[in-house]
Amino acid sequence: MATHTLHTAATRGHADHGWLSSHQTFSFAGYYNPERVHFGALRVLNDDVVAGGKGFGSHPHDNMEIISIPLEGQLEHKDNMGHTQAIHQGDIQIMSTGSGVFHSEYNGHPTQPVKFLQIWLFPNKLNVTPRYDQITLNPADRHNTLQQIISPNPDDAGTWLYQDAWFHLGRFDAGFATTYNLKKQGNGVYVFVIKGSFTVDGQALAERDGLGISGTDNIAITANSADAELLIMEVPMQIN
Amino acid sequence: MQALNILAIGRNPEIMAVINRLLNTPENRTGITVTTDEEALAAFQKTAFDLVLLCAGISEQEGAALSAKLLQLQPGVPVIRHYGGGSGLLDNEIQAALANKQTK
Image (cartoon, rainbow over all chains, first blue to last red; front, side, top):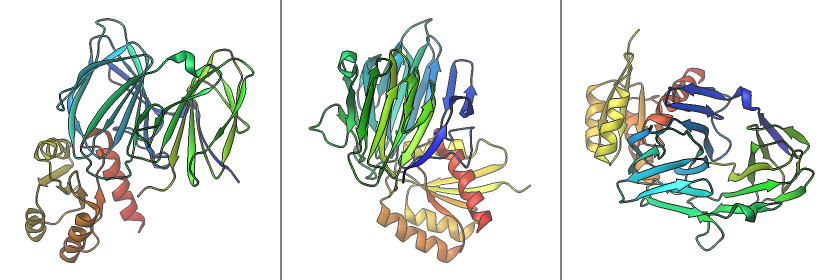
């Protein structure tokens, strides 16, 4: 029988640093809620807004799979592996931080805010050689379908990471219904509503709500509003 | 109230320098960072710690072997893995480990 863990948008942690407004689904930095530390391998889901010209200065990470999904605006990325690149809406950025990487992320626009999701997964392998990747997707390819953006397999659609995790984006017309079939037994799914409203496995979800579902092989999804967008994150429920 | 004293061990000196700064930022916390198991064991023989963090570059096998040696010197000290390399999760991990210790 499926188990649901509901995190409505208003119950998330919130940090306002002036230049950064961050809504945090799971405990992060100054926000600590022992009831909300992770959903399986999904450790961080931050819904960030960075003011124009501002950003995160150079800082380290290790042993985390870090995914950034810009929703509006652009982020300028720089790291000590030699990458200097911008990511825009429609792009997916991934860093396998492994044995350690330093990077910075700045809003590339002087005045307009950048909005993006910052997602961290525990890796399935420690201390790998750090890796950076970014891909550009066609948003039309997720209209009334689930577009795979991340998998564990370098040869599969989207980009890849060091975890048995699959991410999909979908943008649906009102009333459109589909089913997500899990890829791996024992995995769970965390659904995050980017825009609009949905019913997922019988649970009504509004914008920025999140729902963790475990103990099932498939999940019924119906869009309840026009141009509704969601992110599906399938992750292992057991952490090594 | 006595400050928390934390030992962090990792192989990446640049990251350990950042973790050292973060550990020692709050007034109620002190931290020592080292990059070798020998340094960790030497520190453990001299000083009492409330928590040990295993950081980047330490494999699961190395971590298990080092934990066993450290716990022989100071039984009951939580030894946990630090993920992320700094500010995002560090405070959370420390709070969770100490809360878990209190409930045991």
